[in-house]
Length: 168
Image (cartoon, rainbow, N blue to C red):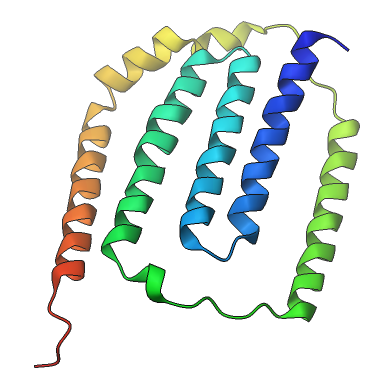
């Protein structure tokens, strides 16, 4: 086994462990931390696939932005005081069987798929420099609008959290 395969295996284990933590924990903060761990593992996989730009964006946007925004929203809400509902055993068993069948089908599909290992003629359209130029030249209004929407969501969460809870 090569060192690269070991590194990929470590990132896969980190991603799956974070996903399991995000799904199985009863505490919302542990769910959010598990999501961050899983996203970090996925960023490592992107790095191993030779996409440092996508890995950096994964860390900056998803871990640095989305996970932190979720933690911020959780802190502003009273989600920590709400008791989670009890788990229903038949639903849990049905979900485990369904996810196992889905995983088995996905493994079967991926094992029969032929992946291209050499770059094709159309791959230069996905070069990092072309993506960066397109984002800064053609799609900058979309990102500015998205930042305004996220700012309004945070302001709305603050207003909802600070609202007086006593009935009028």
